[in-house]
Length: 304
Image 1: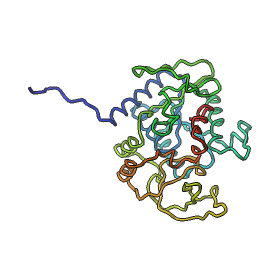
Image 2: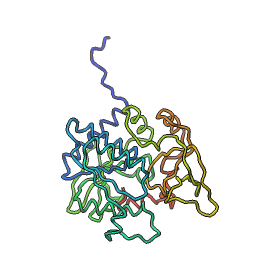
Image 3: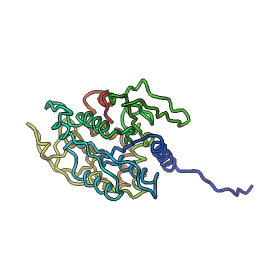
Image 4: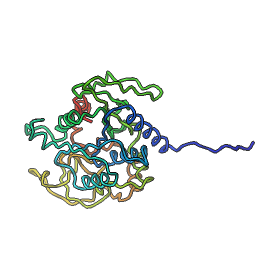
């Protein structure tokens, strides 16, 4: 029997892309003032690319927000600025340093800059009146992120209760909010790290150079390889070494480790990730090593 109809079966990446674009359009139609969390890392770059596709040829109808710890990698900030300038979107920078200076949060000398992002972010959301914030969290990253729904409700204090999430049957999302509340939206929640890299390769997307193998001065500390810098200096017994490394994830450079790697192309990175036994956060994020529930505790307080 001859088939006369076209085969419209989508690839896995096409299905993921279509789902994410649908989410972006739903949120833009439903919420009064959304914003996209944009760090300049690979996940937020994929989100911005998806948003670009969702509204093309029009401009992206919401700003992007970066929470600046003061310890961000220069390569990441340069890529952030490149994307913002190309797309012509408004960039809102919520600075931890400014938040401390203005009394929004308190620097007790013990709390990490990464944790101090919580108060800084919540203040920026309240000050700007954002009702929905797109985040780049994926379920494969970490245990607490696996509990997230696409629409993640936050109360008037910006806090998350994993036991009070709303059902999302048949991909129907409940965006109802009371005064002072907001929603966190995770359009790439169903993507994996491998999906992200396949998509980056497929789209030819610009990403920070530190994701690729390069020579870097590092300090080995607590089983992690930290980039030596003005803010990361060797302690007693530690030494600075030059190794061939790359970063699987980017964040606060005082807490984000790199991995030894020769993968200097996307195809090589895909091969490397395919056999990895640890997620990128479990392998290279010091802020997730304090306890089994470190991420969940931060998320309950308002972390993204």
